[in-house]
Image 1 (cartoon, rainbow, N blue to C red):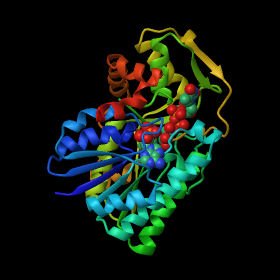
Image 2: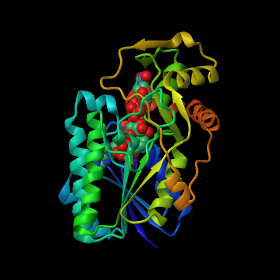
Image 3: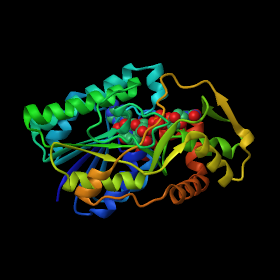
Image 4: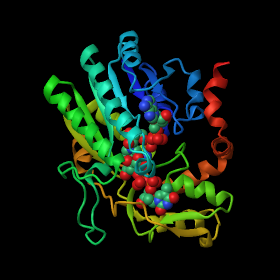
Length: 338
Ligand code: NAD
Ligand code: DAU
């Protein structure tokens, strides 16, 4: 039996991860720490309260004293850091909180790992650390050797965290791994990101803002495939290694929006082209051959299967969307404690 420390578990990817692993590994114990920022939604993880191998703690990864106390109490074996400020547009408006959470927060966790000892620290990183690729060179993909060349304050904070993780491995011998994944979609994604934003706005016949010409390309992966990859890397990956995870599903943004609208029986007239994002990365595309060859990982969802299932989830989860729109999701944890 191992004790896992999962940060950011009330967010999109972390909550999906917790649902997956708390069922798959009934003999392991999972402690979730989340600050419940605007992006953290206790409703995502409320059903896990019923489980005997799980506990939720509200707190901030930048709070060193609090984090150290938790390490002392719980004696973590494995730490997986999902916690982050994750929305690029917010980082363009307000970079500071990105540097605090994504860099300083990571450093606080790494220090605690050195101080108390762990068997593995895993950093959830992103393909955005590699910058972008040209639209007219489909032969080019990001590999683990692609140099870091960031565009936004968000991606710069994530790249900085990755460098810190590798520095703690070299300097203190900390047993670390890093995964860098492409754009995720699936249940529980905050409707500020392209896919849930499109679905939730289309439901109310609201306009869908498409940045620039809509030709920017992302490589989409279902969140479950990402989490299966994280689990494999944490359990079987080689210490000190970085692994890319990608969906083999490159699509221009406009085609994503049109696919969703068609699937929902809504008109393309909802599409509105708006001013482009500052510094907007053109194309992301991931080569996952390392994790495929070394750990036998492969994505299971085609984009078509995954997006249809995802749209259905949002249509069946309108209470979840309404709670976000009304703001009542931010009271969900307090109410659950009464
Ligand atoms: P998210 O914004 O949905 O969730 C982030 C979670 O972290 C929230 O629950 C939030 O409350 C929590 N959090 C934020 N600041 C915190 C702090 N200081 N202390 C404790 N908790 C804090 O993000 P996500 O999309 O689930 O992304 C999770 C991780 O995966 C991030 O590290 C992100 O960089 C990375 N990632 C995301 C994607 C994607 O497509 N969404 C792709 C690749 C990598
Ligand atoms: O590649 C991994 C990254 O994917 C993660 O590291 C980030 O945390 C995650 O947010 C995501 O970043 P993106 O910027 O690619 O995701 P977003 O959903 O914000 O935007 C996807 C694309 O859609 C991007 O080219 C911008 C565009 N877009 C986005 C929004 C919100 C629009 O055209 N209109 C919109 O309203």
